[in-house]
Amino acid sequence: MISESSSQADFSGVVYLKQGKEILSETVRGYANRAEQRLNTVYTRFGIASGCKLFTSIGICQLVEEEIISFKTPISQCLDRSFPNFDEDITIHHLLTHTSGIPDYFDEEEMDDYEELWENLPVYKMKGLKDFLPLFQDKHMMFPAGERFHYNNAGYIILGLIIEQQTGLRFTEYIESKIFKKCGMYDSGYFSMDQLPANTALGYIDDHENGTWRTNHYSVPIKGGADGGAYTTAPDMMKFWEALLQNELLSEEMTKTLLHPHVDVKAEVKYGYGIWMNEKNGSIFKLHVMGYDPGISFCSSVYPQSNSKLVILSNKEDGPRNVTLAIENECMKSTGKRF
Image (cartoon, rainbow, N blue to C red):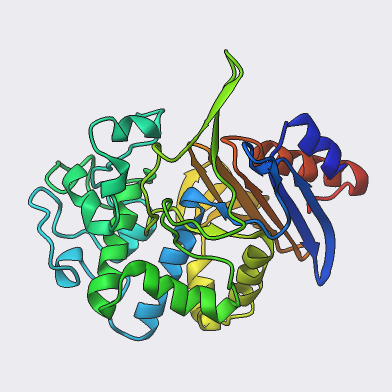
């Protein structure tokens, strides 16, 4: 079923499904490098775009546990950066839940093409979090802090800067040491696109009108950060979920806080700290993260009721969402129950 759905979606990547301790699927399709016809494997590294906002949230929660900051701490009290037109009462909680109202450097509700950002700003200059500040730092608020949910990448850039200032480490170093290493995610990291390690999939952008393709090297920042851009493998992502849910990254109480539905997004969709939640009849049946950039698409879900976890990584712009829905629909048909 999984092989069929991935084939119909012209999928390139990995579908990795686990229930309890049993691996139900390790479906792999497509090329990690099309020019060299190097095939993807279950251990291929893929970019996950915004899927790693959850890592940033966990980093912040770790600082809260250490009593360095709190969720109620205003930006002005934990970050030495000037935001002249921002509300003074914006807190860590607002940033984590996309309710801050600050201007975004890429507003996904108003802009369709992430590549447009880099027409006049070379991607090779975007090497650190501070490099994003000129894109939004002096702009005006979109709405008062706490008024509503509005997905916001800039808020996570600020969260990353807070981690850097409060720990003295580069954001990427902090996440790699405090999360990836703890989970045994030894194939994961924030890699520079001009220094990609072995067994990393290149991202591909297809032109369906003339049948050509190109890599995404000039379409995304050269190195990922707090709002997206990490690389991981399917087994590593599974290790991450298991460590998180076994309270190995945060205390049990803080893990519950991270995974609490803090804000309503729309009917039956909630948002915690860096993670999406689907609800039915007042009960959360799915926790998930996702990420989409030019040449990258990613979905990973946890289904608490069946103790199942799904990781779908792709080096194309689409595929994981449709494959996820196909798997969920097939489960419903065969069992009469959600995952």
